[in-house]
Length: 135
Ligand code: HEC
Ligand code: HEC
Ligand code: HEC
Ligand code: HEC
Image (tube, rainbow, N blue to C red; front, top):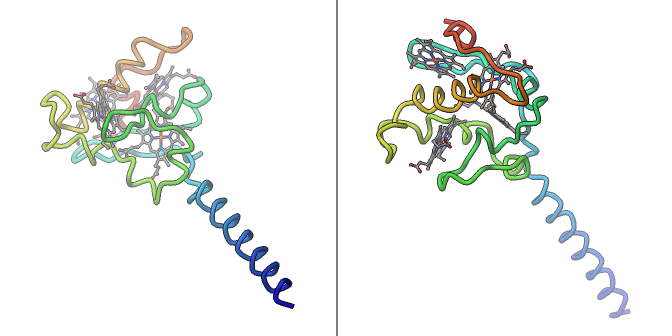
């Protein structure tokens, strides 16, 4: 009799462990939004589409990095609580260490405009203000 309860206990703990770990790896399952997003500044805003950029074969970490400037992968992002953590202005604000990257404008222009000029596999992106800014 005791042995059976021990077995039941072992099976239950193994299941709990299994369920626990699979939740741990899947996390919230946060993914790149399919829809175009609007990045709001204080006065202006700009449009950005994940699918357009991911179709170029660009990795998440080309734009998203952590506080140590290490690139974030889709698995890093999948365990995040919500998309708010990825907001560039969380770090690129007046408290940022490098004075050249203390505004979202500076960080965005450095990342977005530079690549648009350089291009990916011969494809370039818009460089005119109205190519990105919707107001
Ligand atoms: C490749 C895309 C892109 C292009 C081209 C671009 N910008 Fe931006 N810019 C952004 C993004 C993204 C932001 C951050 C969101 C925002 O503030 O609108 C930004 C922010 C700004 C801001 C700060 C706005 C605020 O409210 O804080 C100014 C000013 C600005 N851009 C001016 C310009 C001007 C002028 C041009 C053309 C000479 C230009 N940008 C071209 C992407 C672009
Ligand atoms: C070419 C640049 C770029 C790439 C590549 C990129 N992202 Fe983003 N992503 C952005 C920008 C810009 C934002 C908006 C940040 C902000 O508002 O400050 C954003 C926002 C997000 C958000 C929050 C969306 C919301 O509406 O709250 C998620 C989630 C996200 N990205 C996931 C991903 C994942 C996963 C990948 C890789 C598969 C990826 N991104 C690749 C630029 C990029
Ligand atoms: C968690 C904080 C954090 C977030 C969020 C963040 N950054 Fe950064 N970023 C950094 C740090 C730290 C550096 C390295 C600065 C240095 O070495 O001087 C950096 C450097 C940069 C640089 C200059 C170096 C390079 O990679 O070209 C650019 C451009 C940049 N970030 C753009 C962005 C954009 C665009 C976003 C949003 C998609 C973003 N950052 C989100 C912390 C952050
Ligand atoms: C790694 C390079 C790279 C980065 C970083 C990048 N882009 Fe692009 N973007 C491109 C290329 C290449 C195209 C043209 C795609 C095509 O023709 O299929 C493009 C196209 C676009 C377009 C026109 C298509 C559309 O969706 O309307 C917009 C707007 C745009 N990008 C905004 C942005 C903004 C805003 C950022 C920064 C948050 C950004 N991009 C960062 C390479 C990049």
